[in-house]
Length: 427
Image 1 (cartoon, rainbow, N blue to C red):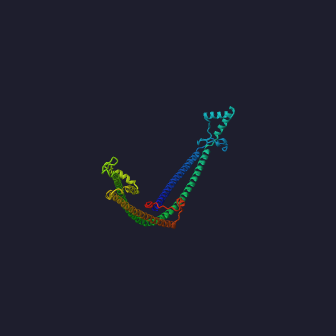
Image 2 (cartoon, helix red, strand yellow; image 1 turned 120 degrees about the vertical axis):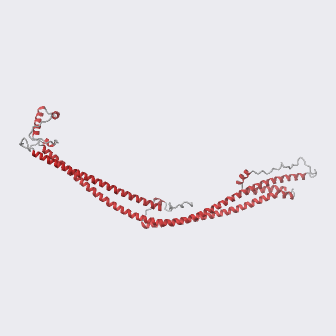
Image 3 (cartoon, rainbow, N blue to C red; image 1 turned 90 degrees about the vertical axis):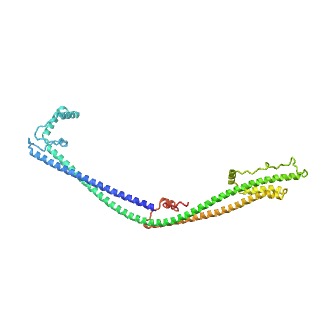
């Protein structure tokens, strides 16, 4: 929860920084636009003043220059010359004017393309010369200056309207920015309050988690001790199995010895008159006939790890069955000498197996107890986490409720606290 709050606060700070940057950028653009508009207005005013001064100079120059020839009809003007854009050249009225040669060539080509003949072109040329003689260039110049001034005034009005519109937009943006800043300040104060509440709740949760961690460490130490005990008991079990295997081999050797003795006794009983001499059918009991016990450590280790506990009992039963046939023919001293070591080994192996079974039962009960303790610790931790989540959820809904996320909508039973370092430690 603390990381989420810190993320939200950092996001709000970034938004505030972006808003401040936008505000400064907007003010900078407005200032640049205002400076640009003022420069344009000043340039237009300066041009207008220059045009007015130039116009006054031209008017004074025209008024000071007397006409050479008095026009009979000054209002008589050619309609073709009104639509032409003649250059602003002050020419004294009454002076003879003629077209240049290249202009005459161009006019003649146009005249011929239109389908007229040369005589009509001469008449048109005379008419053009007549119009040039009576043309008033000062009037055209005044009209051009007036049109230019009118266009400059229109441009100035448009610029003023744009400036007013930009000013209005800047004021509106400033008002909106002030509202956003105020809302962000309120949100920031609310987040700070929630952060303090969440911090106190997290401190309480951390204390509970520390208790759980201490209990878990104690259980880990206890489990380690029990693991060492299991390892020691496993070693003892392997040693007992090795001892049982050795005892079994010794019993097998004793069994073979008993068989040989029984065979000797049977041969002695069958030929009592021979005086104890050895017949060809009598088996010779020598040291070579009896296999000596050979104990291989590697073989014993490999066989002891995969041996069954019922195996010693089976071997004992087989040994007993074989010995039962020969006990009627052997003396009591031979029986006591042949089976004393074997019985002792079997008895010791049974005692060790019984002790191992008791130790395994005790360790199984201890493991069950540890599992129950772990389940209890996990339930306590889940209850503590649920309590913290309910407190945060209640506080969050008390200030401003939020809409559930898609994960909570699809999984209403699952609630994971990502900031808890022990949320997944007991799984």
